Amino acid sequence: ITAGSPGKNSLLQRLHHHHPGDFWVNYELGNDAAHAKPPRNLEARRYLTGALALAPRCHPVMHALAMTFHREGDDMTAR
Image (cartoon, rainbow, N blue to C red; front, side, top):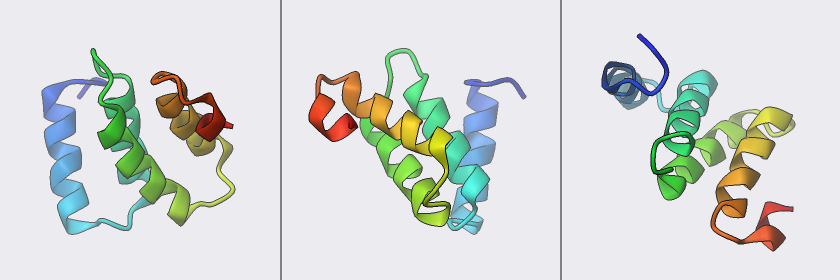
């Protein structure tokens, strides 16, 4: 299953339903939403916030979450 494919998102959604506290599922769902064309920033924030709650010092998650705010011109929150 390739990144951004409907099959990947469907699988991740099913996994999230059964394992909402899984870091990697939240992170991948957040990244997929953030890199969609056009980006689905609110959806990305929801999953990335969940991933950050599970791994509060994970810099890639912090960066991905900040980018969702930056794309919408909210640079103060992005910092």
